[in-house]
Length: 140
Image (cartoon, rainbow, N blue to C red; front, side):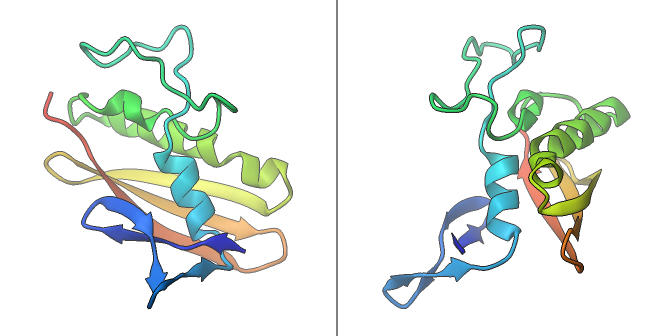
């Protein structure tokens, strides 16, 4: 069981049920944390202009995704491909830990400056999780 996370207009916060924190028995919270927590950039990754911080968590620099590297990228097919690769990389632990049989991500431009990621997970115990997540990018 995880704490539930709500999406309030593109920002994420703990979901509340009255004055209590809501819980989530599904994969949604794990997917949100995996996609929208910044993993440390690889040594050969090009950092966004003006950003010298390679980011990443102090306790596990690989937790999260490298989607933040796309913050100032142009809306191209190559940027979509990188977004898909970064998202699948961030969610690969679900297969490695036996939670999922497969994880597939598709990326699309929802509108100017907004990247859409459709996450499809085949659960190891059966069943399927599918949800669309949006990430706003800065103007390049």
